[in-house]
Image (cartoon, rainbow, N blue to C red; front, side, top):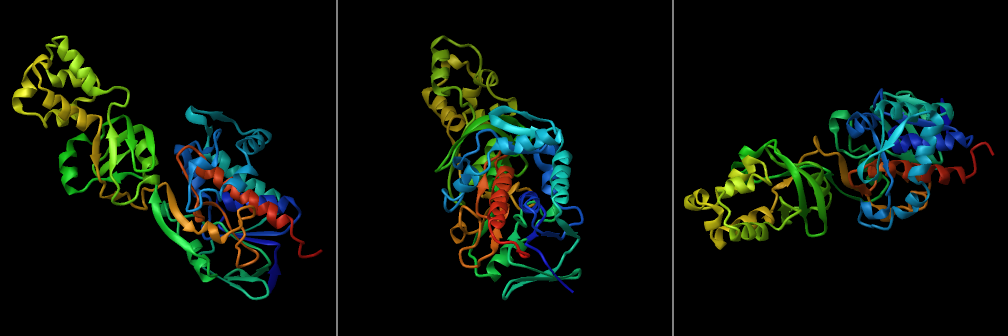
Length: 402
């Protein structure tokens, strides 16, 4: 037996559920299919269980893509207020935090809200379907153990391949390539940067230290907290940096972004500072980090008062603390990456609708697309915005029974 739907959505994550609910509320029939019995698990773990669902300062400048202008149309069609208004109507509390981050008080509430909205819109759920086949002849034909389903419109919203532990796969990229759609190589993003073997040894005693920093790449200047790990560096500033970093590029870290260390040390030296350099630096930096930097000085310079410290030693400390430059070995792996950079080539899609230029009726939305946001709620907002764009586009088409 075959059944027809106005829209088949592959992937019941943030983008897929948003599009499905939009089309369902418009009176159209929608089938949602997902391999997970309990889908949208990334929403559940978002924001440490609190769900950083959007950001007050959403704009294209917070996204990375091969075409940086592509996301503008979808973002213009869905603001953060569009989502907070929905939460207010549903009685779900939320709050604004630093840098415009918008958080719910529970990711489970957002997860339940998305599923409930799609269900109330009349969407049919087909979860726990690990395998299916999708072809297109006169229309799309999806075959799986539950039956054969037809539609003029299919949305692939299967996400990226970050967080494989919650069920992420590359099915979206494989489907895109089956239909001749280009895929830009997916890479882990919003992830830590790892040291090479030599630097791991050099920095091995610093694991667990966290401090505010400024990090420069070739394209970006990012300020925020850095965390030393047993593999390299992590923390919000580093995760953000990973989005812009390319293998082989140098990274420069300023461990004292608020002061120019050379000026401070020379001023205190002129004032006949009697403290040793390690005691002086410990006023600004954690002791273990201080010990790592003072180890670069001669034994004599470590023991004498700051008032007797040479220009050479001050310059050495300034270079390593305000301008610590190195080339990371690589970004962390998929298991720790928060998002996927790359994906379905946006130049193959219409920006207003997310529809494929060469395969009418085929849409892509969410993380599967080559649009990746910074930390701070931007990636979930892209899911809402791109899913909404697809919903609007499908509703403008003639319904099956009209």
